[in-house]
Image (tube, rainbow, N blue to C red; front, side, top):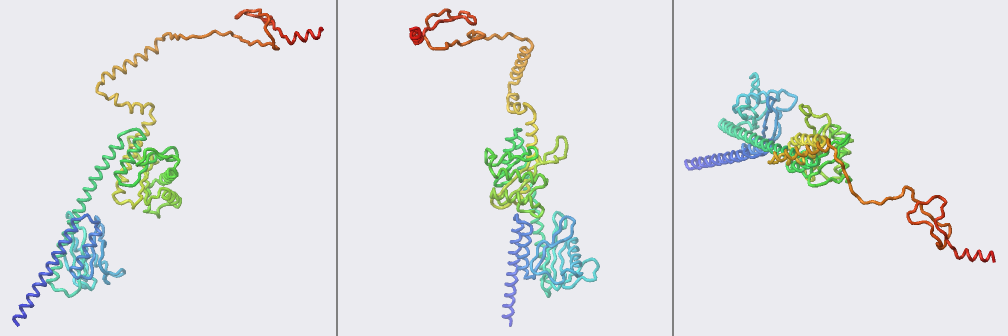
Length: 461
């Protein structure tokens, strides 16, 4: 009997050691997940799958809250217990129990059908033993992990469950801190990229250069397949630049499609994201989008109106100064692409607006192109040359000077006539000299015609 007791004790020790190894492995897996950049919902799903499997539980829920809002279930594992069905008092008392645990900041268990009649502390309306553990982020209560465990667990096992969930709650808090740090770094990186983008698009006041800077720098920033910018001309919009090409084909079908789409979106004054948010668009806009996609073969398209701030004011222009069109031939726009597209609209609109204003000023384009001459190092020499040029222009304007031009020419009479004989003949007598002045009716020369002489002789014969 003593040998059998020793064997049973060894088996229990081995089983306990194996259980602790599984718990350590579970904690290590969750710790690795907490250091990744997974989305929150995916992290909660992985967490619940591992915890429910490791604790041999029925299911679980991860409850979260945003700011001061109420708790809501973000992720579930397994079926929802009958006591939490809608239309009964169970969900309300259950939520009060979760709020109590969250505000206390300490883990807690709730036996089946316990807590009724204890005031506002909440209750467990289910047949399962609830294991609850909250977590906080930077001292702010953020959520609760709830596990549905079968009834009948020993007090030691319940304490082990609570301790495990406390550790997991700390790992969830670490995940959120890591996630926040990653978001802060990403926001800082995107802000720096937008700042560099703004510097590059404002590098020239030439409208064409500014437009091509917007599309080429913007395409590298966002990572889309093609980016186009259209500028308002009268009541329509004209395609000004397309990324990856030097000139725009005005006769291409895609050019007309993009210009028509720009007018439709600028009229609504709201960004267009395709294929998302199709229920908020009119059938006419959908028809234009389908025609444009059919011509360009793109799978996703984003159309954003460009509005610049008015001079000396914080009010944006009522009508978009231009339109930015981004296209994806493979896949759709992710969250980063959307944020960057929205962020680049303001500097793009301001650069185009500055270029349009410069274009309206006479001679400003000439001054801009020759600005290096004005900012050269020998500024005194440049100023002296300009001053001498101005003095010369003033002298020429005030003191007129004779302007003589020498050239060879030939005098011609005022009235020049060509003289012709009425019939053919041989000149018998020339009665004038070359260049001699004559009068009307004067005989100039005598003609002799042999045929006429023969005719006279025949007649007189």
